[in-house]
Length: 167
Image 1 (cartoon, rainbow, N blue to C red):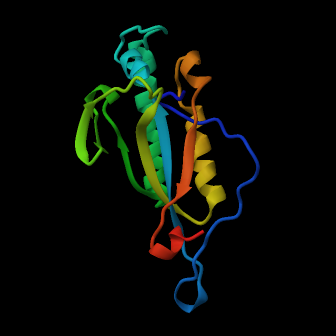
Image 2 (cartoon, rainbow, N blue to C red):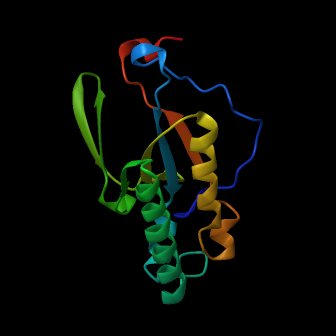
């Protein structure tokens, strides 16, 4: 389970970045999406509602907000931030699917889903390593201990063309 302020960096070095040659043989940057996750319980706790774990204090929430503002500002200043958005609580989600050829709409949250996408950043930088370094900085985000202990983010390259999707 992840909290609203992810990331604990772990695992092997991921330096095998996909860099496409630009005009005149120059290397160009690649866009990466950094994904953070949370549960409905996390959203409830951030709103000050205890739900199995302690609620966030107003000070906790303010500290997270201040961190995120500074984090985003530093990415803007470096020219690496393309876009970032936080998502509203999963209770406001609708899942659209198909069952036996019939469209089925289910309101969230979903019993089978422990966590959902809580927000994302699209960054443009020189390498997978750099995108991973950016995501790892999210591990510095202030959060209650029970949230920080479970926090993580995923970093994925964005496909710019169909050829990027080939394996």
